[in-house]
Length: 348
Image 1 (cartoon, rainbow, N blue to C red):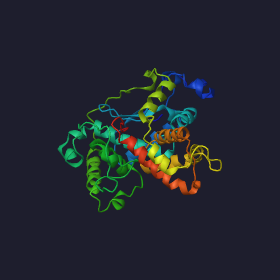
Image 2 (tube, rainbow, N blue to C red):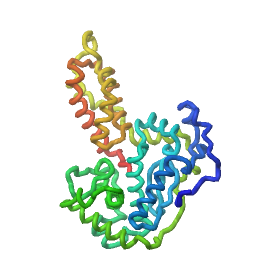
Image 3 (cartoon, rainbow, N blue to C red):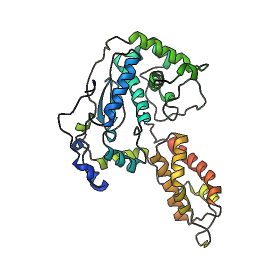
C-alpha cells in the first residue's frame, strides 16, 4: 500500500466499463466506485513520494479522486481527476474533451509535482513568510480570471503549458517547486543567468531546511471526493464544455471570406467546410500545442468556423497545402480572442 493513499472499502466495480458512451454518460460520478489502488495512478504517486524522499523531504501529500486536478487552499493534498483511474473513462474523456490531461506518464508526473508544490505551500504555510512573499508575491492575492503571459520573460520557470507560472504567485511557487523536484531537470544549468534562478535557489534552501520538519497543517480531508459527487458524467461534461467552449459567432465572416472567396455554385472547387474538416486533426494539434489551450476549445472555435463556411456557402480556390498556414494563423488568433474574452476563466 502506498502511504498517503486512502483505499476505498468498496471493492472495484466497473460493470459500466462496457457501456456505450451515451449510456455511460448517465452514470453518476459517485457510482463509478473508483479507487487509486490498482490503477496506474498508484505507481505514479509512489514515484512522486520517492522523488520527495530523494530530496530529503518527509511530508507526503495525500491523494484522492475528484472531478479535476486541484490542491485545496487549506488542505495539503492533491485531488486527481477520476478518468485517470480507469482506461474506459480515459477514452470517454478523450472523446468528450479531445485530450486526456495527465494521461501520459510524463505529463501526469509534471502535474503531480506541480500540485505537490501547492500542498507543501499549504502544509508549511509558506505563503505567510516574508521571504516567500518577497520572492513570489502575495499568496492571498485573488486569482485572475485571465492573464496575459510574457512568453520571453526569464523571471519564471517553464514547466506546464501557457507560461503558467506567470498567472499567480502560488502558481509561480508550484511551478518552481516542480522544476526543482523533477529528477534530472538540470535546473542549475538550464536556468543559469535567468532571474528565475533566484527562486530556484530559494526553494532549494527552503526545502533543505524543512526536510525533516512536521508540517503545522496536517488535514487529511478529501475535498470534493468522487464518492460525494452526485452529478452524472453527462452533467460533468456539460459543465466543462460550457467552461472551455466557444460562443456561436458571426465575427469570423470577414476572415473566412478572405480565405475562401469561392461561391456556393462553384462546381470545380471543394467546399470550405469540407476543406477545414480535412485539416482539423492537424489544426487541433498545432494550435493547441502553441497556445497551450485545451483541444476542446480549439475544436469548438474551428467547428463554428466550419458552420459559418457552410452557412455562407464558401468554397476553397487554393490548394489545401497553401491554405493550411493561413488557416492555422486565423484559428490561433480567434482561439486567443476567445481566451481573452471577458467570460473566459483560466483553469488554475
